[in-house]
Length: 390
Image (cartoon, rainbow, N blue to C red; front, side, top):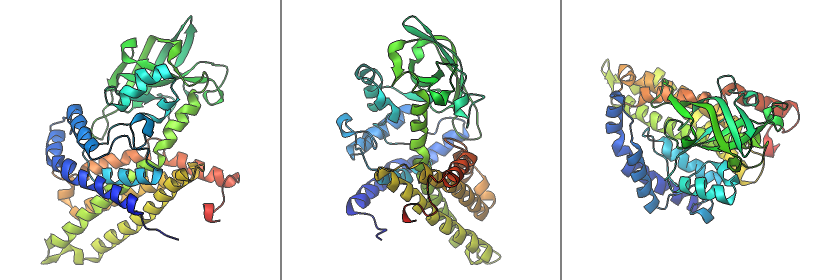
């Protein structure tokens, strides 16, 4: 059993690390300063400039098929790169990406929505969550009613990432109220903001914030249906499922960077005439963090490996997300404790991570939903204890 990276994986990972270290991390102090002033750490124009720099390094469209100018990287490599992205708190991600379900668009829709999104000329958001439909996404109520060649949308979506910046939304709406959304009753629509929906900023404990999207008699042409009529819930689950091994991959990078800071601090900070790293309490926090980071790493890479094998990744991805999200919360909490009062200030990124990583236990599938999926798979015999090694 070989746990080493291939030469290609190591080269791509190291190039991504070099870019993050040289181009993104130097922006951290300015980003912290801006955030203390309640400004975005990185403006959209600055993000775009960084993405173009990364493109010269060859990083463009990590998951995007080569026919659209992307790298089409296997899941393991995508996971490794998302871990590198996690090492900086600057809100940067490589360009050339589009929502995975946009590839279900027809040729006309690809020209109007997919290709401009890949090029960075358009910004999308995905809207399925509602005030009464979070984990229970099949309970959505936003209604789409056919009126000639149009559909008229009424209702509200909430906690929509990119909802404040997007110029079009992928909206999952009820088209057949006689059926539940997960039984063919929902459809996905491509809805330009110019069609009349509006966004309202939602302030959260983290930096930035999602949006509520309001639809009041918004008319959408029938040709703007994404995929097939009644396919909306299925597409929504494909969108959500993609993030379940990338989110903990990102968490892994955060935890590694934070633990490195704790080790450096423990080796330099003195109290009562000795380095705090000589105290058993500090040593145990560092040891526990290292063990949890390594455990998460292999759950995450196994989930990515499952994707690359063409197998159903839901069980392994749920385990990776459940453990990875909990791990990074525990590690950052310990790192703050090691730093004491300094870790609680906004001079360092630790308190920022403390707020940021709490979301990882909620979005794109709560801890409780992951536990439900894992236990259900075992109880119904969909998988065996020990997975592919059973």
